[in-house]
Length: 247
Image (cartoon, one colour):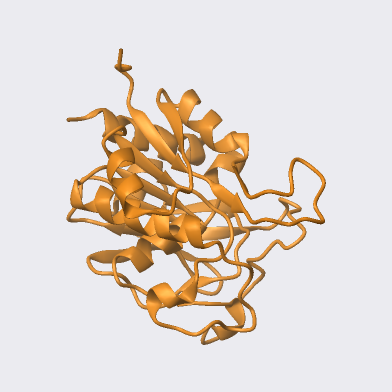
């Protein structure tokens, strides 16, 4: 029997084959930190994890099972998806995940499903709509504050300015919030129908995007799942689940 709670499909990271790796296995595997599905559960939704099947046919079937989509953080999207050659700053890419996420993002947009996209997902959303990325912060037109967190210290924070009247502003109810940061790529050209609705207050790096033509399409460059104890993080997850429950 299908749950009466909104079902949120969550994309997951892909680890490639590495025969020098002992645990958990040298074979390719998919994985996800628990903070994502815990945030959905604590917001009243039912999370299901979407494996990196890679084929658009798999995405067609997956999309039928969900009421909303959460595109998660992780490694870099291959720049061939936005017609660029790899930059020296590009990190390892994963073909199956790239294929699945681009496919399912486009399907979700076509069906007007609610979408929240986090960090890498925020970038995937932009590319799925025809946008491009700066492949490394070193490519950004001017000097930036620290946005990357290569040691995964969870100690990199900065202030974000939110555009009044935007969906994000209505959700969090604030002009400024402090967010965590762990990224080395930045949105360049915007995808079709998208608007930048939040910037890093110090250097104007794009921090949030949304598509006003859809009922709920929101991309966040930071990681609200990792700071769920903060009110603005709880609000964005609740908003995704609530939007996914409205037919």
